[in-house]
Figure 1 (cartoon, one colour):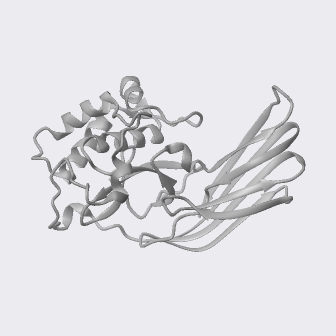
Figure 2 (figure 1 turned 90 degrees about the vertical axis):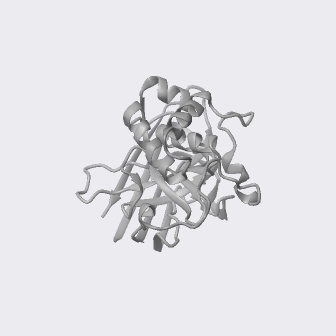
Length: 281
């Protein structure tokens, strides 16, 4: 399915400010599930230098260096992309060992994706508890665990949009019993890691068959399944993702895939405002 995405962000400042280095993460991936044919990035003020590079997960990031002062910053990313059909994992035979906990010691590239969410590398006790519940009665099979876990999350947490603030910890999301897509993605990611399933946070778009009046950025989780590789699961949606999802980037930390990261220098208590718009056609 071919789609055109126009993502615009406009920052305005009460007084002229000096923009410091910004990192922009708005270029969709191009892989077997989504093919990017065109990408254009426009930034105002034009007095800038753009340095593209690859993140540790192989995603495209743009480092922007500004000169001079400005009252506003406009970032506009246009993408032409075609999404592909995602095979249904539950219908294919997998000869690999999918018993839990997974044994991935021989694959050093995946070790970082099973570490706990806490700074000391430990897992959130709330995530451990719900992982134990999801393991009950499934004979330790990875795919059965994912199916049962997502059903548990949907039963325990009501999806509620929340535009501002960082992703919550698993403990807070479960105690509040509500969560945004990024909160639920972190909950699924952390719970998977408790049983040795490599997982990472993904930022991107989800479009609907019937177009919405206003689109927003979306978040979900990718898990590594032996024999199937990295596959996306959306605990705030229908579980296994399909061709209606377009991934921008992934990381072990949600803040590292924010669409824009940066700061500015200006008068204290200066007021600023952000307006954004996403068009998917």
